[in-house]
Amino acid sequence: MAVPFRKISKTRGRMRRTHYKIEAANTVVCKNCGASIKPHRVCPECGFYKGKNVVEKNMEEATK
Image 1 (cartoon, one colour):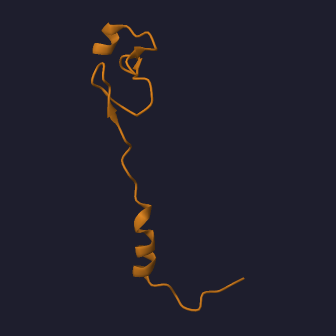
Image 2 (image 1 turned 45 degrees about the horizontal axis):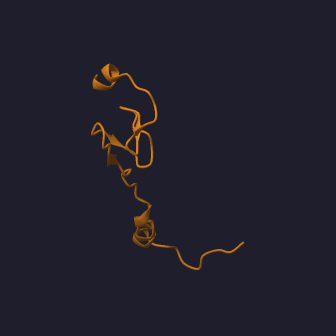
Image 3 (image 1 turned 60 degrees about the vertical axis):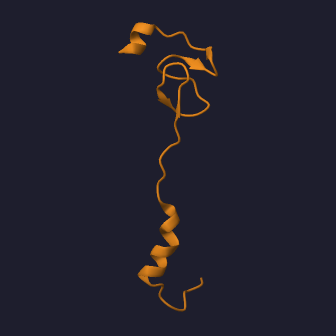
């Protein structure tokens, strides 16, 4: 098994890991109700997708 010739410093190892950070999930605004949702998914608040009612939702529940 290969063994490193020299110890890798803390700085060099941390510089290599700078790209491992967490990014926030992308969100878009629902065109029907204005809720923040993930793109390309049915809105859980109103049940609309691409301007069409895909899932029947009770409007009283959506306003709560």
